[in-house]
Length: 441
Image 1 (cartoon, rainbow, N blue to C red):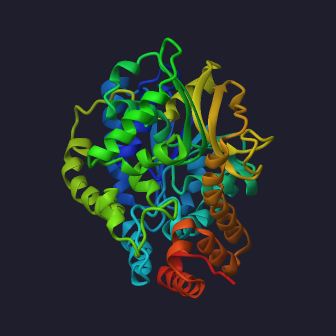
Image 2 (image 1 turned 90 degrees about the horizontal axis):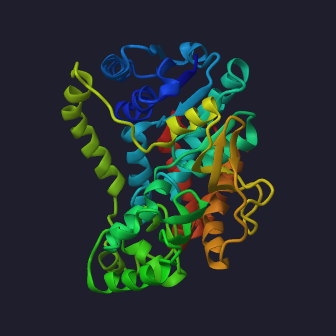
Image 3 (image 1 turned 60 degrees about the vertical axis):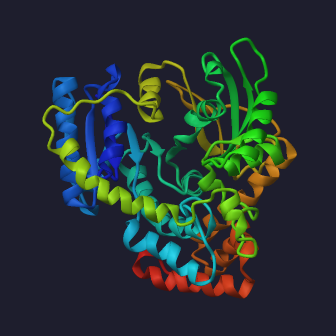
């Protein structure tokens, strides 16, 4: 029997997608599914939701158990084959609010703040100690399990796990699957979707669509570049930052324009406020999403938790396909976040966490060699990797000076604030987070 443990199971909607997918997969239908969270109410809601799906589409074949709090965590993990991670340490209130409101006092504006920038740095620093405790438990009670990480900041957290623990970790993000599909749809090239071939590689949220061909082997990039330039010139739309990437750098990348607006020094500039309007950049987008999701959950709760006839259709989330490929030794290709060991991407450092094609089968998750990125794309990635590596160093050494370094070298933060302002802002953020952050020397 396969054992699947879901950390952060109070994320009911996401748990439905990942674990519902498992209940739709023949090799996983008889699994033992362990739900772990620190919030008893949300844990119970997820259990009721999943039990209904298990009854309705799976004849109740899976065994579903719940585990609450740190004292039950080892039991949740014991003998697991797969551990899915979807935790958010500190939640919207207070931690996301702090991540946005303290920098705002210094004139530093953000859009999402969960992957890079000062918000991504702080989120990583409060999450890594929790993942460290997960890892130590896993090394003891399920040393052969695969850790499927969905939590942001993806590159920092996955990189930490791969460098400082022995846990078999891969980072998974939705943006790889949707990248070329959404691009072609947005440019009116839907007829090119079927049978297309593509290569995507780089880092999480800034992996590059390096190649894209139609089913007949015709290179689609010349037409993509032409249409993207025309659309940005003539139309206000939600993806203007990434289309500007195509125009200036030659290539499209995986994650949304609201994310990428804050991964560089180009678009959010207090000296040039007109750029916000020009590129349609939604400042404070993530707090708005959080507020809306909290309101929406009140409506969704009845549909998901109190619906005895609830069913599920398998989604495109990677998790169940990875588990199935390993259990059945059936090859499956994913875009995964892994260490750049052996120079998978030759012009990025070996300790970087990169997002590359990976083949999955009974032997595990096997990253594929990519080669060199175009020099301008590698350089863009490096501006983010610098922050990843120094934030990991801060978490590993507990040295406050490395938090300063990470913030100073962050492309957006460093372009907006002086060094003195950055240091004071970091100090204010650490103080505001209080017990959510470990001690830093």
